[in-house]
Image (cartoon, rainbow, N blue to C red; front, side, top):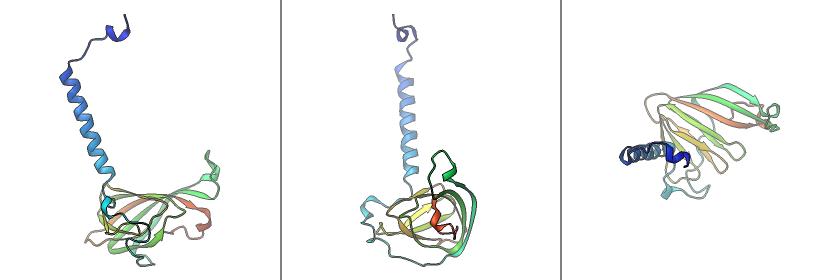
Length: 170
């Protein structure tokens, strides 16, 4: 007799209910994970989306909260910092046009709503509190707080060593 034959078998209905609940939770989580992305029918080749915007920040407080020199960590990635920043963006504030061609990042929208104007999306992208915006190769964009309340973002990125002179590169 195998071990599975010795264990009591659970009724089918409770197992099915748990499966349905788990599936529903996954669907909700997937919806949250993809919130604030460019709609699939609005994605365009890089450079054919939103045009470059302002080149200087307006109403943005950018504080580096922590960074780690990755050359001194087990990954031993030379010339890269793992960096965490807090960006506070006032109403009307602008995170200027910049590229992520050599610097992947993730942005977590802690509070507020903000629009992203991406070179690979034909429409502005609304990001709301709780959204995560991936920024990777092929991402050039700028952001604007068009609302009446401040926006708080947390940014984590792999910051290139050659840009170290200006640690507030957006």
